[in-house]
Length: 315
Ligand code: UDP
Ligand code: MG
Image 1 (cartoon, protein in one colour):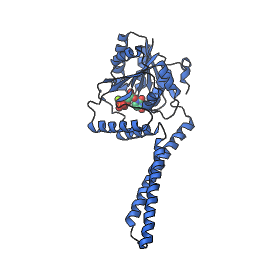
Image 2 (cartoon, rainbow, N blue to C red):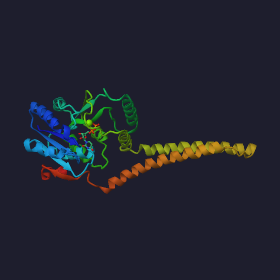
Image 3 (cartoon, rainbow, N blue to C red):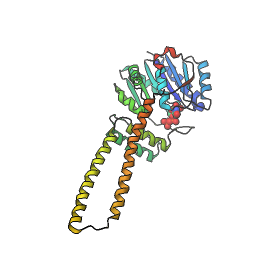
Image 4 (tube, rainbow, N blue to C red):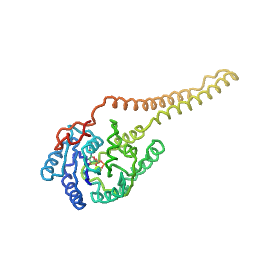
């Protein structure tokens, strides 16, 4: 049994060596053959040089470097394509995913689980963020067809067939959390203590979180479009009722001019609603647009891997 580690890195020069040391120590203790696939996601801080150096001294290091920053989703995809192991562990390079948990994951894998998921608790997170996250997961689990769990990220072990399953999902817009849930297989979850982001700032600004959140809601089904139909029907029903009332009043009492407030409120309200729904439709069209272009998820600039060894590397 062979283990692969997939590590997306974007500007991690400060921690990459420490990460490699820590992980190598734990992997050596496990005593299985392994490879570490580092994916440099277009860093501009010398991460690639650090990786080349690591590869020079450690034969278990594979690296591949993108031509620019394509995002963590693309980096994970590339790593999964190149990983040759029977089991693959995806890990952040910034030491927020404790390497000592790999042994525990492996033990569970050997008991037959295809996905071993490490879930971080939210100890130490700002309270508002925790609250928003709770709300979001409540919403998404009622809405989307996949079940997502709060605190579950990309830190997990995947069996070979789970990886192959993921690689079959070729969509351009990759919402990994959802894809992991979509493939299914026997999964097990365990919790670990939150590790604070050190040094470099987290890539999650409020705006990115918001966009990511919308992605999650829109990536899995057309329910928002359905909702638009329902809201439209509801508005039509209300308008019809109101029209009957207005006509009745006009017949009984003649036409009175006031009604300015109602008019303005209706125009503004309906205008806003229409914009939102147009936006929803636009989001889906945008997604179709990107999917139809069929662009590759990333371009590789430099690697010590032989692409011919891995038939799955074609984009
Ligand atoms: N990362 C990446 N490409 C990006 C942003 C991040 O490959 O465009 C990597 C980064 O190097 C790290 C992991 O993804 O290994 C998580 O990133 P970060 O720590 O910024 O996010 P967080 O820990 O808040 O999820
Ligand atoms: Mg981090």
